[in-house]
Image (tube, rainbow, N blue to C red; front, side, top):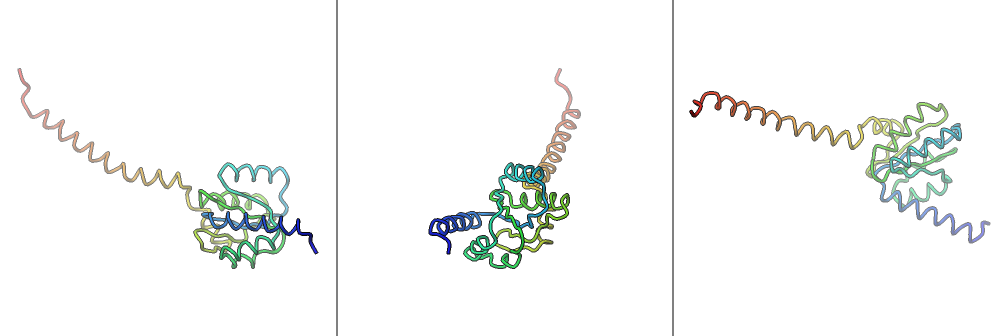
Length: 171
């Protein structure tokens, strides 16, 4: 039987994970196996830079947190060595970064995930990873808004230039 101290530590871990999962935009569960220390260090640094919280946590603790948040369907993927990446700001970042590493390391595998309260299987996470980043999407929207405005400005300037040519110059 674990001591009260150990039980309190586990409860704290679950409570922290519940808080993060509740506030998260997305998350990805991965099979954390066969990755070198060097690759793991690079992966963690890249995730941290993107604002993604990444941790290796016992399956039983992840399962309890998932139950409390309403992501019980993720529990079927909790076998073996797992890690969870939680995206607080960018919903696409965890999936995109982890997909790159899963392609590099054969034994590192995406199992499942969630986005905006919906559970995703591995294919769903892969699809999420293919979505352009928020910055790219904002740039595309701004570009599509600016295009017609520039066209209008050029057309108005052409009309002004044409009218300026047809009026006699004051002497």
